[in-house]
Length: 349
Image 1 (cartoon, rainbow, N blue to C red):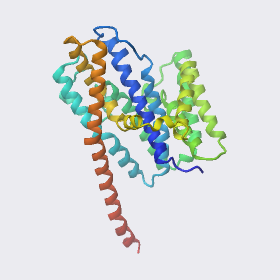
Image 2: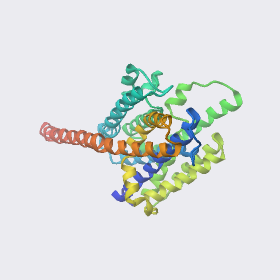
Image 3: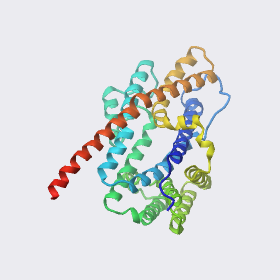
């Protein structure tokens, strides 16, 4: 065994998350904003492929969640870990985004207060409720993945992950065959709840984790990883398969210490704020950008101003909400578990 990733390796993984978040941000501020609202002048650059940062997010999640579950003793430990990581910052982001977009206005994107409150659940879109911010769709995908991962852990099936992924890959192919050949409308709910569209990305991340953790043999790991890439080539086209192979190599390099560039302080910082940056940047950034360009600021400067604003807000939210709340919840939970342990020991005696 090569053991768990060191803290420096985890920092490099966070840095990779930060790069993925920045790619998505730049895509939204250049290409996507142009599509929806139109810049006052054509920006000096655009990033039409930046949305693929989301695919990297999903691959990283596969790596991290499988790593977390292999170190988890009880299902509740995992639930508390994920809740403390996701929800406090998300709640703050929902409130901020709702208030700022309601104040500044953003055509087609503002929502009512009841809708904003429903967003606090994070799985609101399963009931057809609109997002306060469009980026929240990925959080639903992540939550579903966490739920399935927790179930697999609870049933003791982590050792059967290759078989489970193989079955899901096969089901994705079946859906693809019906979609393109037989033209039969299979249940969309099943497709959505099994996250079949994104399972190759999560599966690739899981296999990268396994490849980075053991000395071998890795025959099944390589087989599932290659199957994920081949599946993407079939259902999404060769370009997506090439992207997946490249991102898999990048993730492996980051978690095996082969990319020292990711240890640069600016990238470590970007990784630390990646979650809050992702949550805050889109609708708030667009609303502010519309105001700046309406006031006469040129497109390039408005993009820079909004980017700086988003980075600043994300840093504040990380330091004032995400990190303190996560520490408080996890510390409180740990103390409760420690307090219950002696009592349980007495009962056994």
